[in-house]
Image (cartoon, rainbow, N blue to C red):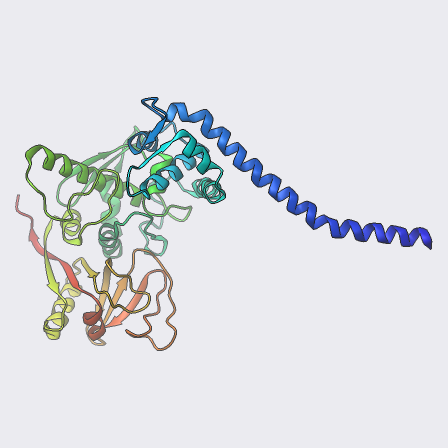
Length: 373
């Protein structure tokens, strides 16, 4: 009996000690991960630092973002370095010792690990059989809601049109032919580029990221043209090369359709019957419609300074169906309305016309008139 009791005591102590050993192992594993990341950065920094001055500039990081040789774990590291630099308001640069210190930050290491896992889930096909599909549509980290909301409106109206815009090349790149006639050559996407824009995974192909890159090329050309001619462009049409943040829907509607656009300001002085007639007519004729929100006070679940696609209008019930390119879900705490917000399922929600006019700022829409040559 004494031997059995001794064994029971020993077993109990082992069970009690096990969680402590597991915790120590977790700490060791985390330390090992951070050490491995530090070693990885030490090894690759000389290659990333193009001018060998010991400082990693945003332009040098972008060289790696655009490189097809940067894949997998290296792409995950570069992507997170790019995000970190973009978050710095002044002097987006990192000395080697600063980057090594960043590598020891647990949050940074975890972000790199999560990015690597996400890369593994991405389907590299251009279109899956169900694409384009709003149920798999998610805006990414870029502030390009003006672009994605308009693309979403087209995806809802005519997915075949979007499929026809992108033509794969044997080289792995793409020819993108927009509705206004612009033809843009897009190189095959790098691992980093797949992570920069719209959220990618195994549920859809890379078509949306290709369109984002194609429009980015257009924005770069406009920026360079403005620099050469000294002629200012319209506000919101040109952004820095490294981002698509900021813009407006009308130029994108024209880009996708080759048609002119109209805008109706939604304010208390506007005629609601005019808005009703306009939405009914646009829906009947299947025109692209987007709406923007720039009010400081807005219902819960509605985002300020954001663009949405209008998917339809029920003229009998006077209900507007809207799509948020975030592809989010929201449940109002109470009766749906301006006080509590509106039930949202993967970005789709419905708003009564009166509250629609009260909540949103401008309706932008396609006019059945071709753009001037």
